[in-house]
Length: 184
Image (cartoon, rainbow, N blue to C red):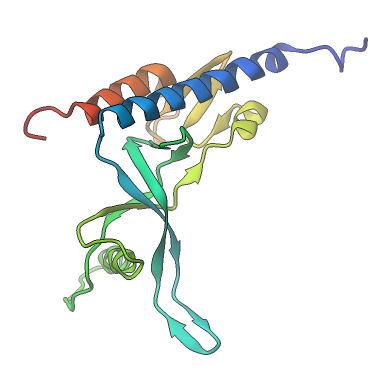
């Protein structure tokens, strides 16, 4: 047997990391489902375009329902996503717009309503799925990071060393969403 074929630390940690990821995400989804925790829409933003010369307004296409757990989203099947952008669906209104960022946010809100979301509903979009293969290959996927044979969440992109163990992060976030503090 050559050295190239011998399993190294990364190869032996691979199944453990993937098993831990699947178990943690499934447990979080099951717990949130048991508590009937408030979920939110997951959507894909489709920009304004022309189809056969006919202008089509920007819209959000529904992809499913997720629970937002800070920097992570989890769906009922236990799939994890890196949180992208979040808006509340709102009908367009003619208002003076002092900044381009505000106009852009209003356009996203209007696109959510155009896509069929009820006014006031929270819509998550630009969320990217956590890729288990990438996690094993490079040691990171979205906000998840592998250190040794443990999974961590990088909860602040501005602070790359701000890592929390995945199990603890999910337990805290699930508890807050499943049993929100009174008045929240």
